[in-house]
Length: 140
Image (cartoon, rainbow, N blue to C red; front, side, top):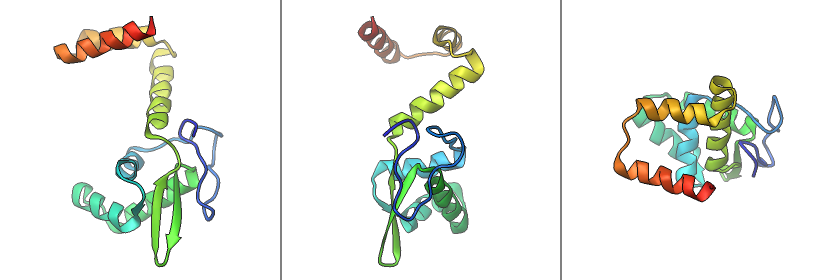
């Protein structure tokens, strides 16, 4: 699977817009987090999880599911009267794509200024600092 793209269920349409990188709204991220947690999930399971936490109406959740299928981020299968949804992309691919998009928009694609700005203004635990050191050591 590539960054925020993938194959969709046989009944779904291909992603629109720029190939390989559909935008996912904040509301759509909430839906995807439910689906990524334990796929496949029914539309009713997603609705129950989100209406309790976000106070959304079931129709709102249905609209978001449909949008994600159209974008190619979700696939679905109809079993009897229920629709079962699975991610058509890996969560890590979408996180990476969104991170790169942010980095490009705000820092001109430059990672070092982003890290410097972030680290200068954020408080990190010793564990977080150790993890960052481990990551940087693996990269060098």
